Image 1 (cartoon, one colour):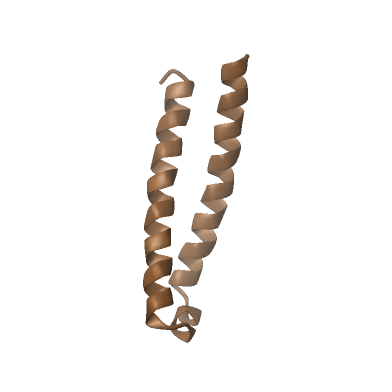
Image 2 (cartoon, rainbow, N blue to C red):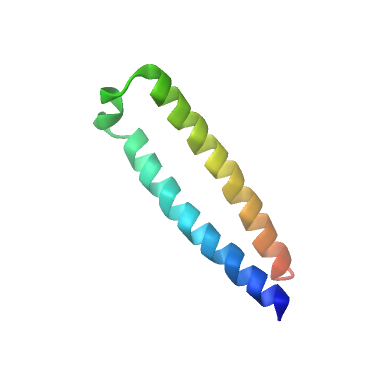
Length: 68
């Protein structure tokens, strides 16, 4: 039972993160990115990379919790 609660929590967190990654990716690929200074662009790219790493971790946790 407790494992199901954890699994649901991880799945919810992953879903929210996927949405944030999608939005940030869209922004990074847009012309709007050129409107902010280079340091902010670099930091947003670093943030994107960290989010993708975190996404991989959550996917691995979820796979483990599902017994795969």
